Image (tube, rainbow over all chains, first blue to last red; front, side):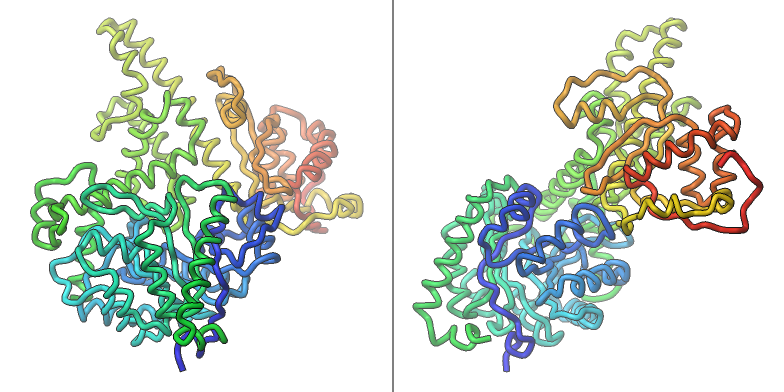
Length: 291
Length: 320
């Protein structure tokens, strides 16, 4: 039995991030949208507009928390306060799963608030596996890790990122949030084959897929989440859907956030691509579509 | 790699990302620890991508938190000079970006205090230098001009500190814990002899500020697009709070009311709190007591009062 089936991970369809410029529109009009993703840390506080808005959102839609500050690859102790807040949030909104990034965000008590890559070695793999297990022990919902975009590589890395992520997911028994835009960005920046990356990810562990826009800075691509999804990323998305089946998909758009209609249209495009791809590869998608 | 090795690598990267410009040591160590990009970037140039994002992200965050201070300092460039110095002295120590600017008012105050003692403090380039550049250019070596310069500088320091404290009060009020609704009938049903010993619970978002300038009017003008003018130096007491619809508001109150709110928030029984308020306002406690009914009516309507814990072990009767 695969990971998604074991954990009864639902296919939520295609959703978007719940972002400030759209809060009023979404809560007032409850426009058609399959589901929403929230940034976990933005909803940890015990009061105020974020908490009230989240309650209203959850009354109308399925909501999945996605974190940016767990620092699963860090060497400081896991932040008990952060974990307690996350566990409470997951319970409060009855999240079907929650996620964060395969990265570290700070060290020696200083948080740089970025998704910094790991050196991919056996030693760091052991380290992260242990921390993922501890995190999962505190949560009432399945936990998934996302491949982050990266702009540097360590000389000491001994394995490709996809191999690290796949083995991490197997050993820690966690899910994977496959961000195909991040695969594309990192592949460009580091010179690896994005198709081989997608093909190497254990399909049954992919609980969610991200698509997003990025910017071309000449000597590197920057993961901006500030534009339409590029054609190459849609191609990777098709490939991922062919491999993984009907997996919940999210369109990320966090900078230069457009009007709601533009974002909804991008989600509709993802929905159409997903449907066409699933229709053309029904055998591979069958088991996932029934979960 | 694991444990100590990994921590060492992470310490290097985190330090490099927070540098203003890469040092020769950083360039050398990056060359050993990191791979060059297949697109032609040297290892330290790959770190530059994270460094650029570090400063953009944190400065943008502080921009959003401190609109009044930014205006008082003369604009975004001057504010960023201050914010960079602040981030170097107070690197982010929490995952919570909402708290990134928590120490900025204290940082500003400490810098001003050092200035007053004549210390040389600005190793990183202070915003104050930018703000006062015009003064410095015209500030001749003449003692009189210097004195005027110092007075102007002190006045700007005081205004900037007020602006910073106000802006941070709004940040703190934004996501303070919610409180259960308060039934105003509790006020009517509390026995009269229980009031002096009663403790009044206030909404957790409530922030009280004794300021030297009405900077709350300036902030309101800035955020509503109205014409912003530099506030005069007039002592002003301000309460910042979050209303029932979660909108953030500020309102001026008199000194007695502010002192009473401060005492109540500290858990002081109402009788003693009234006496403290009277001392602060130079009033008779009985006069404060006479105004209490009006204040409580207004504070209840504004959602500031969230509970009354009556006690029969009352303190000595006061004006309450």
